Length: 259
Length: 330
Image (cartoon, each protein chain N blue to C red):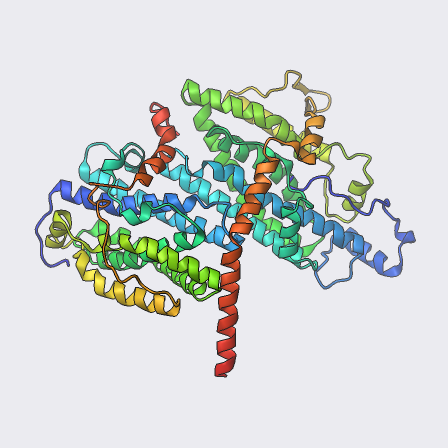
């Protein structure tokens, strides 16, 4: 990636960094909603740990986005003072937690993409992006390991756990396609050697998830239709607005306060 | 204090002369500062008492996730959110070490969990109070974790080895929790008018319940006397409460907040603050189940446990399949 060099414009780079940071922000928030309510103590700890990693990564991505934008916004300003149409996360990560099966399936589908994206970003022509990717990839590696084990364990567990995991997969599969669709921002990143072509990550993704679904005795839906509108910000789901009302409430209600 | 109203044998402390040789050797070892380990002989009362105390402490850590978890999704900055998540995760970890310590005494975590969910075993009443504003995250860290540390630091020297060792690690983390709480209070107390109001309101609501955490006066309690002889309780409730007040009052002054006790004053002669006792009727009401959040805290845990049954069953079933496949391959 680092060989071809066409400088992206500031707006495109800002957009790309918001995509990375908003994915981890929104998913980190969703996972943190489990705190104290998990099926077993070890899972409570693991979920909090995952959320913590994702929130930490958010700070790195969004702080860098703010620097690139150069308009005086830091990670908090971006996280707590943008409205739905400014968010650039995948539709997948804003989907509600549902039952534990949906939460862990969402995590698995995201982690499998996230780790390969981060691995590619470690070769980015932008040294700061490469550094954030390197740090984050260590965390994403064990997120994926844990999500894989849990999807297999529950898919190949009891009849009920199998049924719930199959439902979760059927529900969430239509949100996978969006990860691999390129737009003008992605093309600019590819041209600058900053990020991989999203479509290039698909074959390895399919191999990985197919292997896991086989081990988990789950059936991947035939239809590869993918909802879009999250990473472009053109049409989020209704869920994101509700999440933001909670997440941003204090900052919005007391705009002159520091915390 | 995360364990409250722990009953012991109720029979009063035996003198060394009244003990049989085995029990005498046990007591002499404790008197000499030795540790009791899981496989050592111990009186039934010691074992039962410790199971109740450690179990209640573990349950408090677990239920204690809820009032703070209540604000994770509304934390005002990414850093505050991360700190609060880390703190609540620590509490779950404390629960885990403590359940493990209790298991060394011959009780299972599942049994302790069932006893918590059925209401048979208690957890600290402080967690039956609601967290209503962001300043409550400050007050809980500063006062609730502060009171817990007051009790737990001496427990690092408790006679039961696994409990003492768990407490060493827990105390390190609790000390970070208290500092992060006080840090939130500093920001709030030095912030806008609205933030100062939130900070004072949080102190007003948590002061009394924090004083109650040490339990009613136990000067004449046979249970406490026995626990102290066994070194599973190191100080009297009043002693710890006084120490807590003496530490907190200057901290509140530094914040520019008013401790909600009109009779609070420094007593030169005693070298301590005089203060008003909390409302003990309220304490016993909360203990009976009539606190503001008793019903919902227990309901939330029961719901999490019931909703999670299919997950636990699924993972156990998968583990059994894997074991069977491994055996068949051998």
